[in-house]
Length: 214
Image (tube, rainbow, N blue to C red; front, top):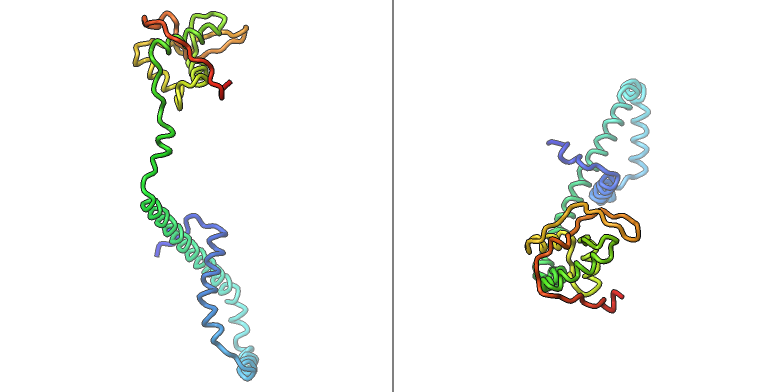
């Protein structure tokens, strides 16, 4: 038997579980054994009679025997504990799978995480120009700030910066990495869209700030 497969992940928990299982299995057999006083007396008498003969071998081999027995006990307890823990884990996993199968697929979380539809191009470009006006330069807008302003106005539900980037690039809008802009003298270097890179579009409107966000 290859013990290393069972000794992986050895822990005090596995050792304790194995001990309990072994004791639980042995206890019924031990409880059935009845020892009388006569039997105890006879055993003591035999021990005293053979003690001169057995003294030297016992003294010589007792430490080794006890050590081997202790090691075997620990190994067996750990193996039993790990095996039982693995079986319980497998049963719990199977029960979870059966429960999930009975409950059926739950699409509510997926629906909650679906991206909101993109705003109209004209409104999107109007928002970009509005955000660009917040910087000291007024020539570009950081995508993170566009996203933040838009979400405060009920746009870009569940969007992240990569989503906004992909959408703008899909519209043919060129983006600039690490664009330096200052806000009241404070510098920020982030992914941005230049106003000069915005395509021609009909005038759009910037939605009002949503009441919750306000």
